Length: 303
Image (tube, rainbow, N blue to C red; front, side, top):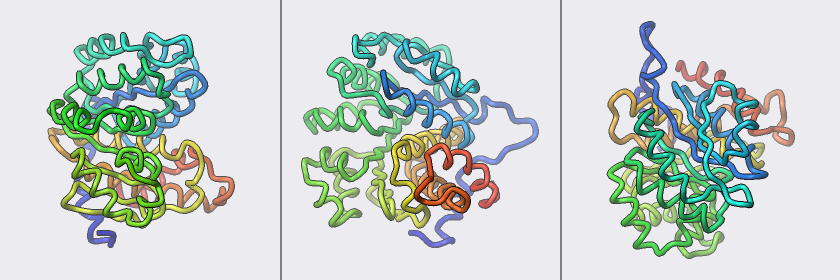
């Protein structure tokens, strides 16, 4: 579904804002992201989640990267975590994240941007996914980590969480998850996205021209966006947008909503890029330009 009438339910899905509302009504995103040399991924995803309307964002990242993120996004909170000698997360991070969740009651987990696939980081990712029973947006290195695990084990891990999840792969990541080739994924993008949902459950958002979103029943082919998005950081930005939208839904009593968050997130991400290229051009567009154009995208949709 891609016509304007199909967009209306997505716009109604997002909670409205009242004069008496406070930040707690718009959700708290926990973003697990970043490693040495990849702190920018955490910065972009964090900014995007805030611009998408999340009331609060906490970024959990290696302790050595805390200062860099805090300097770039003063509106965010940080949670410094134990790290390996190469600057990625260690398994001991899991208990610290559990403790933070007890204190802060996170609404949505987003994990993957810039994490690395270090073996110790892989243990941390699996541990966090298995420990927090909250909706999850699974992206980037978190997808690569899961693709290296037996598929049956991944399905069991996710189903035992007791909360919904969204995968956000690009064609290469989806190919690894399906043990296929990227060319095969691209030859039938709709069928490939449905195959992942059949294999691992949840919702699949397959990035690329005509981003595909499916929960196995409904299917959205996104009509917005342009070639300017073919640049590093675009995926991190999309992850933040989806998490920020979903957190607002969850904080207002929603129990599912992964499909709607992914479809509306893809639409807004592309629309913001379409707005930004009017002054930046497709060649010069940056992920940060897309984030800065999100307010105009929301205004255009009456949100």
